[in-house]
Amino acid sequence: MSKGLWCRVILPAIFLLVLLVLVVLAVLPSFMRAREKTRYAAPVESALGPTEAEKGYAELEQEEPAAELPATSEGLTFAPAGVNWDAIIKASLAQRARKIIYRGYLTLESAKIGKTVDNVKQVASELGGYVESAEYDRQGERVTASITVRVPQENFHRAMNALQNLGRVVGRREEAEEVTGEFRDLRARLATLELTEQRLLSLLDRAGTLTAALKVENELTRVRGEIERLRSYLDYLRDQVAMSTIAVSIVQPRAEVALAAAGAQAARWRPRKILAHALASLLLTLQVIATVAIWLVTFTPIWLPVALIVLLARRRLAGAATKTGGE
Image 1 (cartoon, helix red, strand yellow):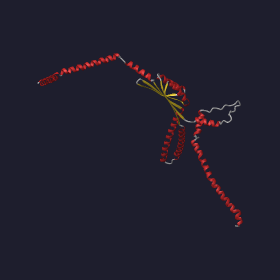
Image 2 (cartoon, one colour):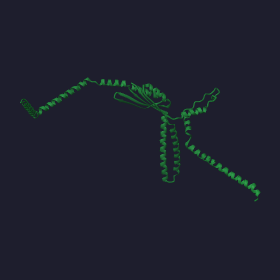
Image 3 (cartoon, helix red, strand yellow):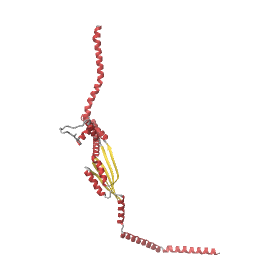
Image 4 (cartoon, one colour):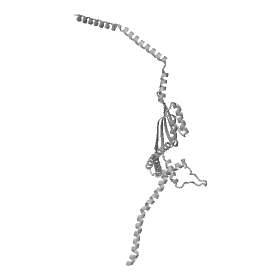
């Protein structure tokens, strides 16, 4: 092989081959990573469904359709220059997508417990709510009532303001618990468990032995139980978010309680009954005296001689002491 052929053909060919190998080695890792992402992105998205934000937006759009923007006479949407409607709408949806549980506690003083309870029920009904529980209690002359109502979340503050006008407010407390993060975590766990359930069903169909089928069946039972538990808790959270809880305690004023106690005591005074008790006590006392007299008379042969002996002994001792003093 001539030196010119080596320099003109073989060396450039070797150089180009080495360069091509280096380029392939540099590009191959990025290509493999992109392929792996493409391979696993579709199954995960189909199994887990849309993101939590997208689900929240979809629910909000179904429950509360967005208000349309004002239109001009030509039917075109009017948007002032410089206003970022997209950012405003996204911020509004994000705010409405928050999951917050509202709870309220009221203590009222009212002289008319029954009427106040009826008014609480009426307020709850007018605001789209209902009575969850009601209880009356009497401690001596003090009557109290406890009533718990549920109202839609958007009417929570209106209900609190309306209820506090039904009596004198002794105490008021409001609580707001945000469960957005917990709600999203539960939905993600639920989606993962549902995907696991599908995989276990697939394994159960391919189980070759009875032992393997039993193991898969046991694991499937456990996963389904966890799925039902999470679904129940999610339903509970949805209910707590949608309907706020207000607990109202109604008590009588202290003056009313004192007046009722005095009236009750006056009403309990019965002169005839007192006279009958006094006569009964007198008769009982006379019976006791008569009983003692009968016992004394009966035991006279025993106690009378002893009493005479003691009396004579005391007289003799007294006489002896007198003579000794005179000498």
